[in-house]
Image (cartoon, rainbow, N blue to C red; front, side, top):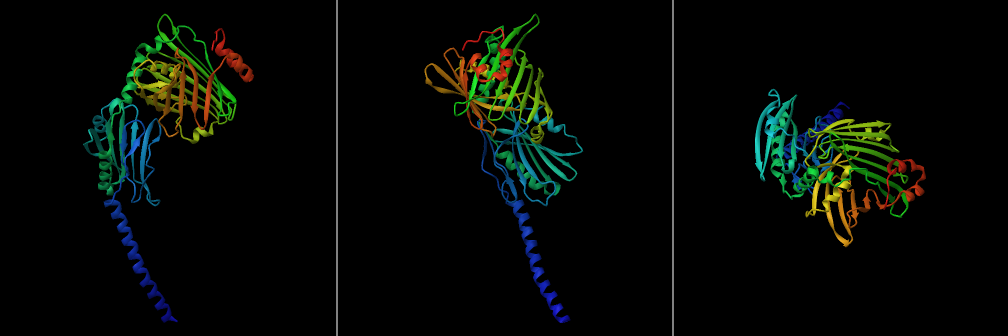
Length: 442
């Protein structure tokens, strides 16, 4: 019996030793492949913005191979995809709409010397990427900053453990050298357009008394009336200054009840403004206050009442964000776009400050006229939601219809007080508030 046990042990050892050897060889091969066989994606383009980059992918690196909107920027990421690894290595690029005013080299030089171990510069594809290596608690991070045109900027960040520093350098260098930026002129056109607005074209286009409210009946794809929108905008001149005042009320009865009211007051050059938004929907009541103080920074304060959804998606209650040269509040967007009809340019990109506090680039394009009496402008958000809006104007440049595409297609048709009061008597108080003492002729 003892002899049988000994034979069994020897057999087990005979089997186990080659198995361990195979596992060791596989592990060694895995490490070698990861270090020496680094693969990169093809060029991943950022829609309408002329930028592309290659990211690590394969040999345990995983990338979703697309740019995602995140915290008022576009981000693309790759991760080292092993569950057992703590502090998983990663690589990411972040496209910023407004560059930090401090030059990249100076920003990196200001990193504390006790953590910074090296700095340098890479020049590739007519771009200059300044970089610094930071080493803290056994983690090594390589940071890179590159200025683009129109005040944009791209940041590169690669994290590895210190004993994999050569791999981190290789990844960083491959990403940096893969960046391509082909200036398509859309941002520069946006800068020229917004500059003209701020230099007086917007304020000069407004009445110095309350403009009659624009009233739109909202219908769904089956032509059923499901809500309405009111807006008004005017210039107000006092003894000391002139301000732009705007207000908007939006009511959706179905399929998901929602209403929103907003009030905007700002300087003619739009460098200073205060914008308050209140929203009530199935996710709860919430409010947003957006303030620009003239310094190029906008403060965003989100007020929530029972909105579990807002907390779940991780939007910060309070934020400060750098404003780009082409940022425009959404509350005055439709009024501003009327001025785009008067210039020769056909398309552009601007940044829109939305009522939820997000700042998202939008591609804006004049479409060929199908009717000699109607002109049209279409704009699409450049985040992943694929939302677009098309405005139709008559010969006097007044909006006569808006088409929205957001999880379905909706039409906003020009209407009047009597029709809206008949369709939605439960909201007659808002009609009175927006249209009192005004003659509405549509």
